[in-house]
Length: 327
Image (cartoon, rainbow, N blue to C red; front, side, top):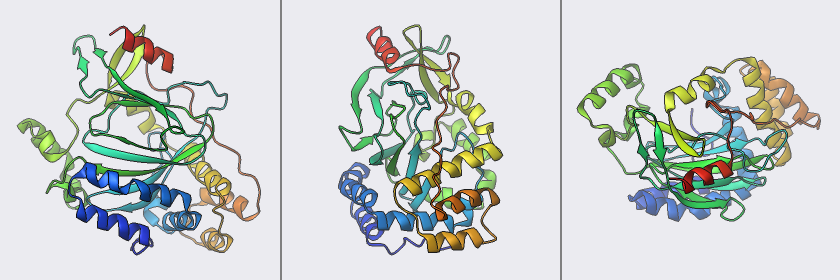
């Protein structure tokens, strides 16, 4: 199905910028102003809502606590645009980690704060030392800031970083690209290759060609703090519980979060939402929240989890500072 945003001026402009700037960092820099314009344009955001709620792929996806609530905007083999939602803590404690320190492998991310207070974040030097025997690690802080200070910022490929839970519900509009153009980028859209993805990965790892193909290392780490020491944890181990956390409660959480944003950002289009409510393709768990939007009934806020999947369950920004100073 054709993306209804295909011919929108913003999308045409960002496609043009992408074509004119093969260097990925140049493309990101020149697209910054567009991300802010998109996020400030409620008419455009109403089209983003429509683009998702008419898309069977979005409607029927399998939500999990790993797959945080989001909206698609636009995607090509060279870049993609999304909106991510960040619920606050039910009982806010400033400087509480939202997840582990991590990087996005070979992906560059430019993110624009478009709603709420935004979050606090720390970036680290790319060079990280991990002791493979005890997983003790050394990381150095390179930048510390809030989205209020830098509403648009960029995270480079392989750059470790951490987000701390926002004081208020927040949303960001994001541009993602690989760090460089590769002839293999279009392969992730190939439906035939999806069936042989794992055997292909094993061959690539065997040949030691992960970076040539722009895929994650065979063993990828994330980091947290314990006793003023950065500790590594394998990514697959860290994400296993959230990837397996699926079902009706997660479905409700995801759609309630999305509809909370629609209501509080003022993006309710009652004519369109009536069509969605009456469409037989709309999953049943969407409908109570859509009905609330139509009836002007307040949708209650959702909250993030206070604990994350590490041995100590939580850590703070002060823990990060203490570990960095003891390196």
